[in-house]
Amino acid sequence: MLTIQIDTDFSSTYLEQQINIYKQILENLLDTKKKQEVEDEEEELKELKKSKIKTKKIKYDEPLVLPEVDEIEETPPPIEEKKEEVKTKPESSEKISCDCGTVYAKKNKKRHESSKFHQEYLKISYINNKV
Image 1 (cartoon, rainbow, N blue to C red):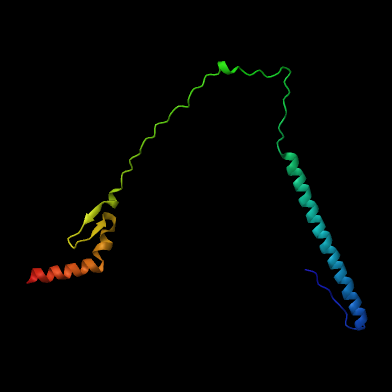
Image 2: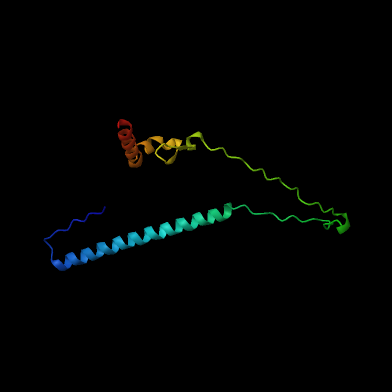
């Protein structure tokens, strides 16, 4: 950060002139810094262009001879058999039917047992067994 000390003993016009000079110096510094950044970017781009791999053209002395159409055997591409993969469901996704009448996955047993529907069923069945 650039700090500027200004004596207040001088007239205000002199101070304004000095401030304007400092502003111009700052602008010039910023302009040169921007120019330098642009030049650096241009150099990097040039280096990247140079580093790209160029393909070489090979010249053949003899002309390329292609086989005649009769010599070419047409063979169909091999047929790949599609194998159906049987994905086994994990044991935790096994379906269980509860006495309350709902069906849930084995992994959700605790969630089902704490549900309102199951709790109401337990209350009703307890009352019926008690009577």
